[in-house]
Image 1 (cartoon, rainbow, N blue to C red):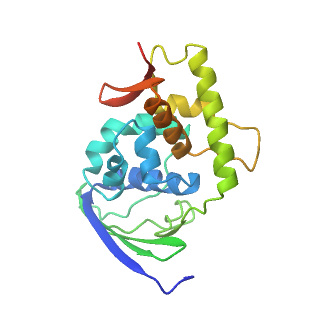
Image 2: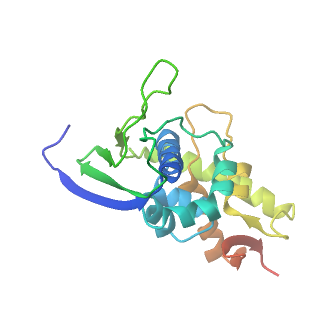
Length: 221
């Protein structure tokens, strides 16, 4: 670890093996995308805490039932991380405890996942998933942040001028509109879109409504 400043925390929950596989898949996807839990909450059209509750193992089955289809659309991927759990012949499908221990320093979060299962091993079996994961804390480059905001704002203003907000747009639909820049170093994150949308709301150019229990952004009528 890069720092003597260490913060420790942990959380746990009960779930079935299939739900753990999908929970792990979405956790792994988020880390690879370098998005925050609040980024995912925003793309799902939900309050900031919504995705973090899921990641902290709160009502995992309920979340997966309602949100997995949209999450797969957001990531443009429905493939789960392969894993095969070991069970004795007499064992049925039961919920088991999953615990995540988190150590945080100034530059990273370190996750250790503890399970109530073991995994099948063998040449014809998938490799066991990594249970020690790391997440870099974002390093903010003010120039790139400014360029990202300018890019997103320009795309949104163009969309507004063309009447693209008249029927309402969800967060993830708008993210598809603005995320591609054509520049390898200029990466658009959901937070850039969120900040620009809220600026436009404050300026009275658009409004946010609740449609089917998700945020929907539309022009002022």
